Image (tube, rainbow, N blue to C red; front, top):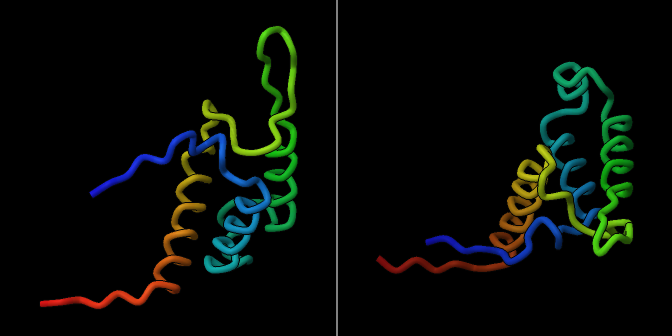
Length: 102
């Protein structure tokens, strides 16, 4: 079973993405992340924030700041969406009580 989320990349909340990335780094371990990535957690999150909050699009010869979501053509968009959806999945699993019938 699978679902399709309409306009997923455009609808991802930027601040929510940053929180999900921070939680993922924390669960991986901040020092381990810094050793693997070569950048501190704080610097990485700052760079990601700058990226997310500085995406511009042009439509009908006008330029707009993209206030939510991520750029579809970005190589990081699939990773960010996976982290966000995994976070949402964990929230649902924690809130829902599944009863299995054999």
